[in-house]
Image (cartoon, rainbow, N blue to C red; front, side, top):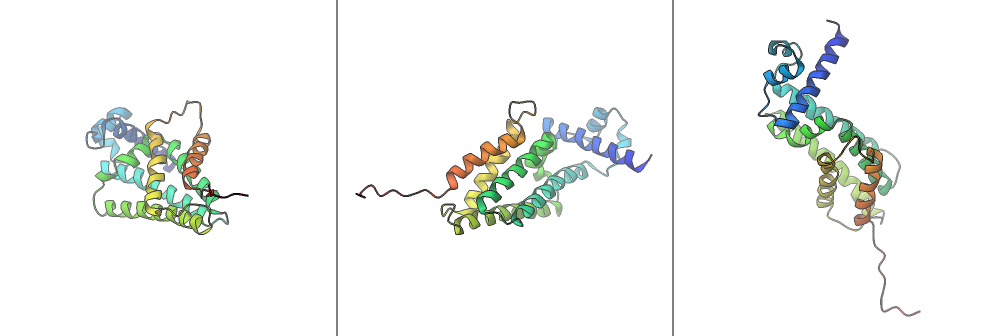
Length: 203
C-alpha cells in the first residue's frame, strides 16, 4: 500500500473514531467498534495505529497545535489588542467548526489521556490561555479594555467560544466567520472601557 493511501486510511480511521467517541464516549468505544464502523477486520486497524489512545492523542494534540500556532501568530502581528482579540476568536471558531466531531473529542475526552501525555496536553492548554491573557493585558495597557481579571476573562472567553460545539450546525444560517463576528461583538461589549459620565456636571 502506498504512503498516500496509508495516510488517507489513517485519516479516515481517525474521523470514524472521532464520531464514535463523540456519540458514545471514548471509554465506551472499542477498537472493534471502530473497525466495524469502517467495515474492516479489527486486526487491520493496527496497521495504522498502535492503540485507541493513540487516536485520542492524535485528535487532541492536532487541534491543540493548531490553536496555539494560530494565537501565537496573532500575537506577533502589529495590531491593537481589540484587533488581535477579534482575529484570535475568529481563528478559534474556524478551527473548532472545521471538524465538529474531532473538536468535540478535543473539548470533552482529553481527560482520558494517560501520563505523560495528559500533563503535556494541560501544559498546552495553559500556554493557549496565557497567550489570550497577553492580548487582554495589552488591551488594558492600551486603555481599550477595562481593568479586568485577565485569568477570569480568558476563561470566560474560552467557555463562550468552546460552547459553539454544542449548537453549531454546518448547514445552518450562519457560517463560522459570521458566528465569530457575533461572538466577538458580544465579548468586546463586556471588555471595552466604558466612558464615565458625571451626572453632576453642568455646562
